[in-house]
Length: 446
Ligand SMILES: [Zn+2]
Image 1 (cartoon, rainbow, N blue to C red):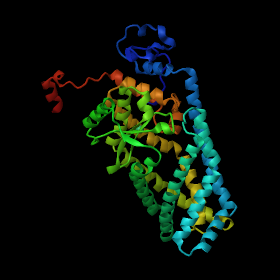
Image 2: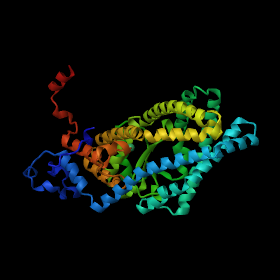
Image 3: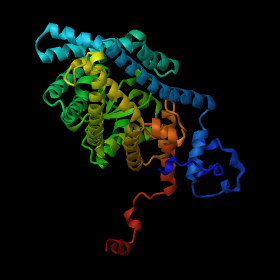
Image 4: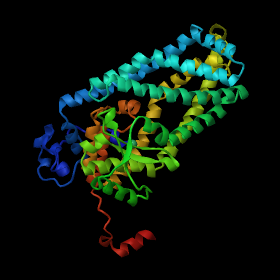
């Protein structure tokens, strides 16, 4: 957590830290401090500040505005979702949809399926204006999107199709649980949520991601070889690294690990490939390998299970209380009644909204672990700092600690650069065994 503490403004000696880099040339206000002249040690705080100061003000203001706009979108998305739920309940549209499904068929599973599809479509349509603003208009305003509206909308429809199929299956199973265990559904329901999340993560690289992008093995040996060497050094059984054509949708640089068990795949996007040097690519890929080696997929699924269990337990209490009070008015009979789905969504999205800082922190901590793994595997502190600045195109570089706690699902640029500079200042040797005395080693072993 030391990264979150603010650096003292007095420390502004920009040292050999960033020698040879553009960042060194831009110095802070304490530039004329005598400490600067010939000190050998690197001051990580000052070096971090020097990197941050190297970003032109207009660029910084733009990415700050983009990222801070995201804070408000979090609120707007919640309000829109809550508003839709309340509308469907209080207007009795939800009850009407349920009644209609009961007239259509006597099979409960089909009733749930019919209700689910109608509900999901209604929610999609009602939240469409905000969706267009957030994911199309705003992305273009900030120069982050590359798609025309028809291309974007086509992908929206594919996504909607996947959501309709996947969510309907999940809801059919969940409502079967609600009918059989109206009191204990929150425990069984958590099991269902975890199993489906696992399946989703497992099949995503094989069945879902190819619907949006093309993944192909990275062929350039000058890029793939250094990456594969790192993989071998860290016991990662990959034969190839993948390149994904993310430039179809966005100008962002990124890489990812997806899948679990047999479907795990490490891929870097083509923007990264175009905009970054080999050391920077190594640094990013080392971070992704960190996710793999540290088993983050399984860990995050476990945390998810805990969050869902607590969330469902609270949802059960709140749902029953709401039905006792407003059930007649809304035409909702109980947990096993599909007409109560908007109420479930309202309660769960409220809990999710309130839990935002905790969920972000859980993810950010694993990201920080991957960063720590990455810097040790790639040993490229300069490159790590440069990548952090490039990611600063869409993530505010220097938030205050509270902001970072609430809104950041990755460490901020400042935190990442500070980690790189701390690593560099520690000046670790490459582990040349010939330098250590055998006698000393014996002593430490005792
Ligand atoms: Zn990551």
